Figure 1: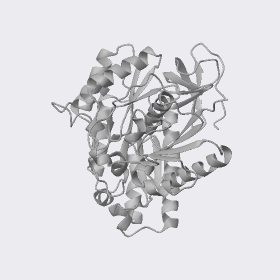
Figure 2 (figure 1 turned 90 degrees about the horizontal axis):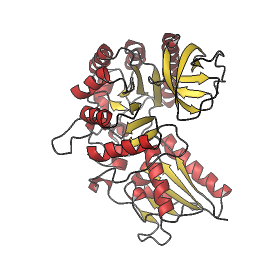
Figure 3 (figure 1 turned 90 degrees about the vertical axis):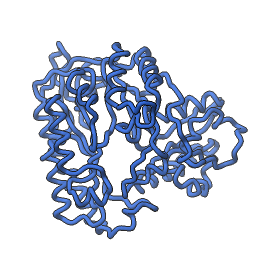
Figure 4 (figure 1 turned 30 degrees about the horizontal axis):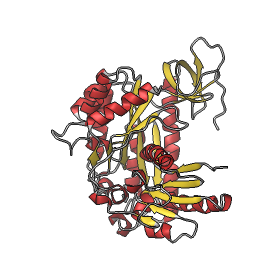
Length: 427
């Protein structure tokens, strides 16, 4: 009996998308009885989890071929090649290449080339995503910025954009497959178009998709840089109800000195103004943010500015990262904050995030929203609020729901016409 190919994905939404490309390539190449690990390098913990999963897979599937790819493999291929459990290491450019998973593919056990030499992205189209209610479309890859804490440009290369026509065609195909929501994703999607003829903007791409694919009910953006929202994107937020009213911002900190030492392109005031400008044109927009606790040199007062930003900006959803020094980055050489203090600050920031989510959920009670059903009893509102509901609705469908309460983590909702309160456990 032929055994399946399993894909184990770590990290970002872009990796989730690319794992489906890997799945398609592996099938085309005739790969069987294998596990592919699509790794993340954003933190040391992400790398540790990948290595742990590889060792566990070898114990559980002793005869399977174990293949490692993704950012961690791109940045440090030797470390994975040194693991006796690993059969093949592929770089980020190689993982989606035709023939990469063929039994007798050339190139040896480690195939990782210079990612900085890659000039194209999204030369691949897929028809759907396994076991997902929404689809992701890669519009951009790589990053031209060099934040002092970040190793990702060395795993992804310089910024490069997918052609608008390719993106529109892929969104159209996914809509035809029945996906009710498509997420535009990339490493730095606000830089989309800067390398294309005429330097079009992300807002122009969004407007083009919404105009040319009218059958798509909902378009969503993944994480964006807090330094900029172009005028066309701002106009789409104000005028296009099919563009989801949710922005996840790469804020990282709320103190100007720390932002400067991070080499971020925005100040605290810039971030607050951007949020206010968006709310002026789309008042129902919810905001999430990535925030780092315990960045080197961070004093208690500096951390306090980040803690205060959660309420000052009216954030609803937080991704909190304890600072993790990445080898080769400038931040790894800066005076560190004590590990115990980093952990404590991350816990305080997460607690502030819990309070912020509670305030957001309080504001949702009484609203009627279109929930995208993710699985039985769980859906997602346009503003990214999680909805627990009781009733029969298939995954991937949009259903009108009325929010009647919350448990501090999720909103409780009833389907239109339903008479029972959602009591789905928050586990």
